Length: 444
Image (cartoon, rainbow, N blue to C red; front, side, top):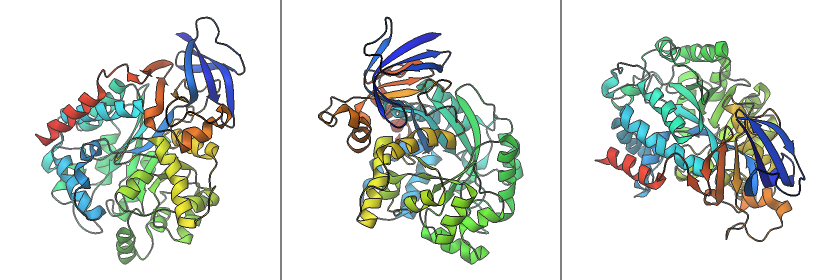
């Protein structure tokens, strides 16, 4: 199907271009015509600033059910985790599909066109496999299709509760017992037009060192993305040193996990040697600032990682909020608080993390740009809301990153079709109601 969109303002990677016409066919961009002045006959008109679709590189869809409930009282990541486990215990393939469909629809409303789902709730309670051992993963893939966005299912190996300790009662449903059995289950998963399959190591505490290479080899053979929670907590670093005499980053490097197709999620508590190791290997870093501050994890060395050579991407992780624009500006603003200086990233660099580099981290290198041959995935930010009105259009990128929120997303197009039009989801008629029903079902 052929369709032309006329973009009032378009972000073309390094500049705002007024009046760009974008031709699409069969879900891809075939031509971009900047400076057209007015819309061609028959073109769909998108008022505002159109960006490439945003990539949410790190998601746990079921965490959406925790919003609000985990803000009562005090504690740490480890006390929050107990509430998270209680929610995971109540998931079934049907309830997970309903929750993920609503969560992914919320993402589409926020301009997100692709999500990396770090998926580890594999089995029934007690660890018994479903009749379809990938029933939970298939529920997520179906949920993304129903919500109209792309997904990379990062099927996660999770085998232990800590160094040398078996999984606890909550974690039994996460575990495939061995990395080989994990690999056998994952090998059955099939990619689709909207879905790609990647791998994940939950963390160095959850996958024994002698099984890390199995997961890395599985991803290498398929040339699939490989993600891993890395140094999110100082306590995990200390435990790794006690068990192995080295940091988690060094342990992963020693077992062949680091490399250009690998992304470390968080990378918060790193040594200088860790930063150099990650940068030299070309390993990416997915920063999740709203979750990292919500869980009191700390501010990671994102600027130092970028200087070392680590590509940066962004994720909403626990979905304390779903807003990739907030994640982008938080990365810069966190660094300002840490260093008491401004201007560590340009708006263009932050948008690249939210678009092209995020898609690359998820195994969608053909997405994240507005250029011929790219997937026709884009989102339009209103420039006339109470948050965005006033600045000159040439400062549209700065306005989007430093002032706009997810509420300013007007349109989201995936594969050349409207998923969000004029702020309303075209496939999920009432997203707030869908969220309320899905979350309520888990609390019943």
